[in-house]
Image 1 (tube, rainbow, N blue to C red):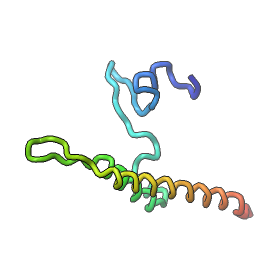
Image 2: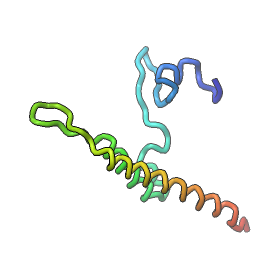
Image 3: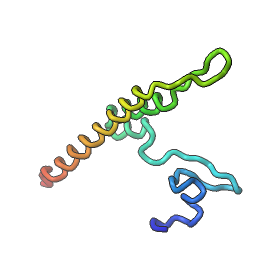
Length: 105
């Protein structure tokens, strides 16, 4: 495995990472860049708002009177995901253009 990670990292969590093992128990931690506060700290408030919306729509599971999960609205999640995808694509282009056109002097 590359990146200096141990063989158990990733295998225990299905290859997705985001976990740390202490005392035989896996502790879940958020991957870097998955925190709206960090995005705001780096002057990316739109990215933070889009990420919060994505998290909210992904976790939007209400229950009925009997405690059963109600159906989710897949269109809301799809729209939030698409907004994040479009934003990150445009941000990538803007940052790349800025890096190539920025005058170093």
